[in-house]
Image 1 (cartoon, rainbow, N blue to C red):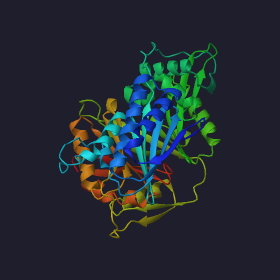
Image 2: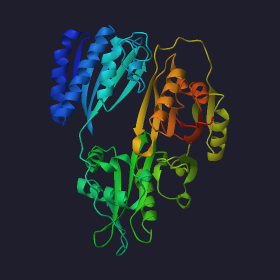
Image 3: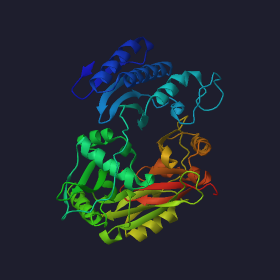
Image 4: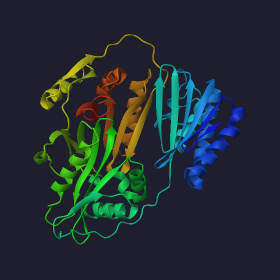
Length: 438
């Protein structure tokens, strides 16, 4: 066992005889890394079930890593076997005693299914023949009732400064909840403690504006979406006359300009931004609640540095969309078409999902390719639609040829390209929106 201030590592065979050691390490990690008792027990169960699954899959030697996150703890298992079927991790997998009864039905996969359901999120990676499974268990944060909020008549020109302590973030999140519709409030606003931990870890940034009397007049948030791009939320202007938003946007651009980021775009925008040099990247219709009338989610973007060109994989089904967007944004891209080469595919595909129930939004992304990807995608859409998710998106990274090759499945399943985010991932990111009529 190897321990450090930041992680615990175990090197051991995939054998059920080592379950006790993995459980003990997970229990200790949960306590040291800040999980409460219930969450720590979930981490222990995740560790146990993952090892039992890998033992049944005869995964060989494995490396287990437990590391703290800003808002929780992650446990990862890395092993040299690309043939292990991880399809039980899919949102639509269900337990079954019948080894032939649908996705996730194999009893040997039941531990993996249980582990993924007890976690708060997962990621899967495959490099050559080395595979990694990582599960995340989040800390339990209270969701306090927001403070009463009303618009402020600013005294003098507001002063802008970094916001980081939990009380200031609670005040800002309360103002957003009280003065803005729910669909433009970031998910972490409901848990100011989570936001404070993210700020402390350098994963989230906030600038607040206060007047001469110290009253909060506005705030803007941002995060690094990739090494070269920034996503921002706001600007949230709490002033009576709306005079603070411009200062917040200018301060945001100055701050992110010092990070080396090449591109900035809105995660959630509260107003048009053309006057600040932003271009409208897309207007996505969102169906909220039971309303038949969608609201428009505008996405704005701005290049901060000169773009010298890049390479992007494309599929014939969305090549014209990409060319049109690159021409409109005046970006030079070498488009490389994907081709069917007859290579063997992984047995089971895995699709990640980030759900925002309040918005009826499901953002899907490919974790692991497989021969069943088309059927898996269709199952996800059907299950999410039946659960009331009316805004289903799918995101791919054009740096990865196998992501672009999913275009065939996406188009057949009713997805249409809707948003291009330059440098949103390793390369550009393309977001598809599910159109039921298609």
